[in-house]
Image 1: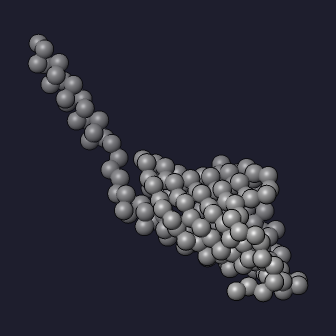
Image 2 (image 1 turned 180 degrees about the horizontal axis):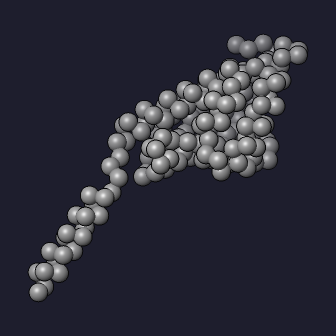
Length: 160
């Protein structure tokens, strides 16, 4: 009888293992890298619709020196306001990506020259960026938390 219990437990564990979602970490890393490329392109082209596709509906953005933005609608609304005033030249460098199940954690640095459309004045921002991404039901990844800060003094003038 004791052996039947062990056999039953083994069958249950095998069944749970068979139901567990198989994760291809390297494929996920490549997908997340492409998401960051899309993010840079969306910011640099002022494409709010493309940017919107990258965030979960309940995303939270925590920008440097500003209050948090709660929800995709608020994040995209604020981005649209910025796109009307400035041109971005964001360049992100991914430092590392860690994936745990349906969550991914990305650390990056960025350089972002921002040029005012009216005056032509450029301010260059240097910073660090943390993203928490959430796997969606279709296995895509979207930004859930978007957090950044500046790690060098802001340089105003022509971009270099």
